Length: 148
Image 1 (cartoon, rainbow, N blue to C red):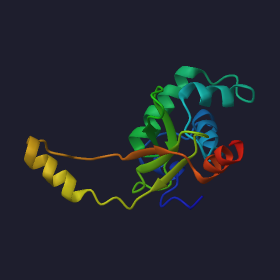
Image 2: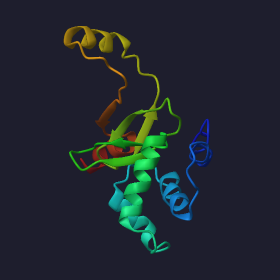
Image 3: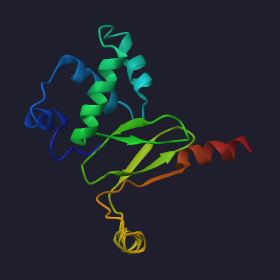
Image 4: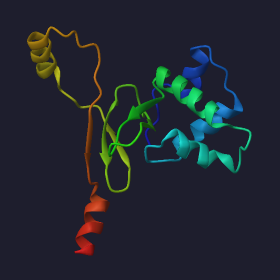
């Protein structure tokens, strides 16, 4: 994974948030996972080594991380929202594998013409956007081909 332009820990300190052991443990879960995770999955991942971290703490921490741009909320397969670590603030767009759940971030997203047309058509002032595309990664496509 590429280095972040500003580390999540520096971002938290910069914004006045304490680097608590709970927040660092939750951050470590995301750093070690290539997939998007629901709050319940984060809780499960943490529970054995950190039984003192409750589900409410996970939700509150994800809210802070989301606000700071450390993670981004994604929606996959109609499930409840899950989260994935942002590699940089510019990479708020992602490809989500519907087979294995891996998330691939990208920043090249030229939607300026579409945003301008939609604004003119609807009168809506677009302030931000998030693009998520779902499909199958190379590995899942290969696995399906082998099964056939």
